[in-house]
Image (tube, rainbow, N blue to C red; front, side, top):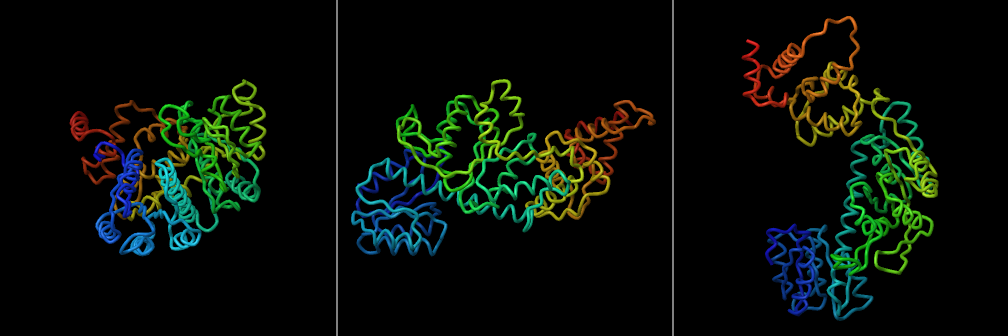
Length: 455
């Protein structure tokens, strides 16, 4: 199959001594975007596996020569992260249990339909994705915040932290309020990983980023054939979050019709796939977030009052970064450590001038903007160098200058200020015009022309 122009979802090796099984599985999985190779012999398959990187092996248990169990052992010994699905015409509880104990993710008996094998494969990949995400997030939280999560030393953020820790001990719904970029998802993850659901999945749905006609399927799943393009059954986010936490970001942008369906799912603790009449029970803790005033949205008729009260059992409001400026040096140094490690670049620290500059800026994009600004500064700062104000975007410098109170100073014209800033950047770069032009966001020829005009 020519997959050069299609995005490959994963590479799969199918091993079965029946050629028709290999062909059927290959056809079923290639149709939904997988790159599939097959082999009629386990030893040949083992040689293929060692020479190429496969994400999954689908293997028959009973085969002449090396059997599926032996191949399973070799695959897991070689790479324990490889997914393995066992198939057999000799289904038994004993062989199923044994294969799972040896590390197989799934077990499916013959005969099976194309839809069944697709479902089992998709489920295995989805479970691995969620497990990997949870492992990553636990490590990320530990790396970023240490043993005890610290998300700011300001009184406002300590209150957020204390409330998040307390509510984590319950299964109550939580509504997180705050401007874009304040860290609403970080708080939601903190609640999840401090709760008894920490070993379960944490699933995020950005309600404002998914088209309205696809949101129901994303949340509740759909049955095969439910609509044009529904080639196979799909589980929704409620099912994927079963046993864990579902984070509904920007829920204030959700339409009223969908709000009613969310309310029903929360009250009944069950969901219905698009195109299906069957109810599926779910055990999910919901944390919702928005940058809107939902109380005002309720008054305006844009948000259901009953859903608002159902979500607003516990409300956590995150203050914007401009209202907790004592947190800026702490967060900035945290991001400096993260990006210095990622880029393998030992940037020393922030100069006093740079920290004053950061504290003097209003951060309309909040913590997200601060993170991006520090990343940029680390890129332009040299190893062992202190980060200076000139390492941050020029537009930030303009805003800081504009907001700085100076009634007694003599105002300068724009051209004089521009040249003063250019010279400051040049000094910080040791006279390196190419680097200065990069920081200023102009071409070297433009910088040269401005310097010539001044001369």
